[in-house]
Length: 326
Image 1 (cartoon, helix red, strand yellow):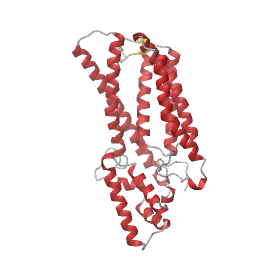
Image 2 (tube, one colour):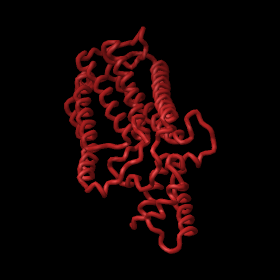
Image 3 (tube, rainbow, N blue to C red):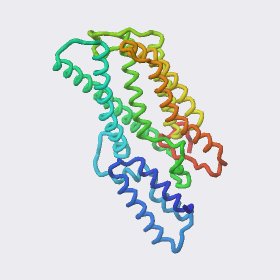
Image 4 (cartoon, helix red, strand yellow):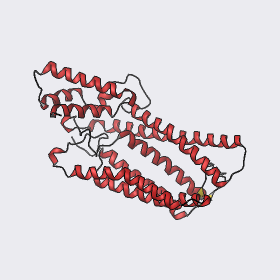
């Protein structure tokens, strides 16, 4: 891939990050065609990388370009709305599934008595409550992002296409995945704090009547929300810098592994001992899955950071840093 083509692909890739999955391929193809038409009209023969950079500079920041394809007005700005909806759709599928599975396991473990209709109604109410809470957190996160951008927008650096990160840059932040993780982390924090308040595990979210509560070690129950907060801070730091480093990725892995230890004492052991399963096996499997998911990215980051500085492109900041001066 020539340097000028690679620069166009970097730009198109960044625009695509702010588009919904449904329309991304079509808009990316249209954008490539538009850029090529402008290059053909303005530069005879093969345009130089500087010529391509000139055209891309006129098109503007990838986020603003993505926003220009939206024609509707939303509660959250049109540049963030597609990303918000992708995060919400992920949650609307995963959160109810997790809640239903947990309710079934909880019923089997605690041997609760009741009618089928009663159990169905209680599960449905828990699903609705969990989904509503998750959705509210997601909207709040995106509203905060939107507000912060309005406040510091005038300090945003001038867009330079040559600073676009490579499409395969392992340090690039996946905006949707990151926001989904932050919302899920905030949701888990609420749950852990509720468990701490009632003194154990329960799936009835009622402060005055939490139902049957399974006691768990309080010291580990205290560490779980602390672990969630620290993990959230690491992710927020990566989101603010719009870049993962090997050090940040390693810190995230260590925090997540410690979270598995906490879950072993708070969740796996209290519940699985009741049905004769080995909680140690479940904890080890969880840790292995986590390592298989995180270690390859960590290795790629270490290799990428060791490349010569000239071969590593500077990233574009998603969230302008208020301390940055023009």
